[in-house]
Image (tube, rainbow over the protein chains, first blue to last red):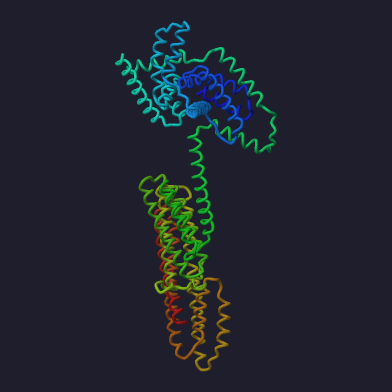
Length: 191
Length: 410
């Protein structure tokens, strides 16, 4: 509650006073979650960094230029912008007939990382196993799993970010977990 | 498996998914530099109120939850609609306050009274009694301002209903809580006295043009209206006496004064009735004399002059209607002389009866005052009731005489 109020104050300062310091505070609060959110979808470090940077600059522009539009929740705004930016990226790639990020690519990158001399511990193994499976899920499922479990938001907060009802989020989450378990099970049985 | 999977998902946050620290710091600096470049001096020249309004809108939008804003908006809409409806209703009700039965806005006035009564009923029986008395006072005003006998009659009927309801309420309260009944009885006694005084102020029941009547409606005659007024007066009197009875039972202060006040008013009413019948009697006697002399040399003009002179002799407004009727008799023809004599006899008989009633009334007043001095308030109250009955008798006789004189006039 306190955090939410503080965030609203920062948002108010940005909107009314174009306060860069307030925006910097919001940036500090959300840059990591947004980076993780983007990285989970693009699986490319450099691309994730560029996109994250771009998302924040767009958010700033939106907040100071679109004065007529009412914004009451920075978290919902920044995640919506991140989702839109990723969709834009996919469209650009489709137009250029490039391959979208695939599981294969991320596995390749993982292999490259391992080759750089970073031995994969138990946690890394889990990550190497889970990330490709998450990326195989559809966007809606990825989003709820990311927000609810990776970022640790409450169902209500997740619902607010995704613009859905709490019930809808619960149902989606249940289906996402079910699908993820299926994918893991298939993977294990194939070994 | 689900719990394990969830736990693994939660741990993902601590691994490779996180950004590079160096990039984070560098990107922050770069982002802030770009942002700083976009900041230009505020070139907007908004009016003060515009700035305030924009700030208020942002504050409400950012800090007030959306559901609350939506609810507030909906509430405000309902409040505005409600206030519009209520203000319209209030305006109509205010405009209808002076309306009389049969007029366009009278229905609105009745609806407002009904609403008030429903609210009062929901609150308490005491409030119901008070509201009925308040409405009764309104009915008396309507009766006083009535432009026709039909309107007057309707007001009297409504008044009767209100008094009956008050009576019922008083009975209920008395049964339920004698202590509470005292407060109500005081109010009832005060108000009934006021109403009776106000009713007595309107004496000319024949005045005013008649409202056009449809086939179904029956024109209210003076006699009919007189009887209705007498009946409602009797009812009010009885209610007032009942209220005093409650006070007597509870041995309240000033009960003596209240009984004395009732006695005085009834005595005054009897005197008024006596004088009314006396004047009628005199006028009829003069008319009879004139009628017998004029049969041989009819002189309508001089007769009218005589009668006009008599009319000016009659003191007080209470005799106006009677004088009017006698004037009608005072245009004699040979055939009417006999009927004039009949009227004279009827008036004389009536006068005797009223005299008797007055005498009995005087005796009753004396007896009542003696009882009051002896502190026998219950006995005194019975005498008040008896006196009320004498008054009713006298009133009925006077009314009858008026009717006879009026018919003879026709």
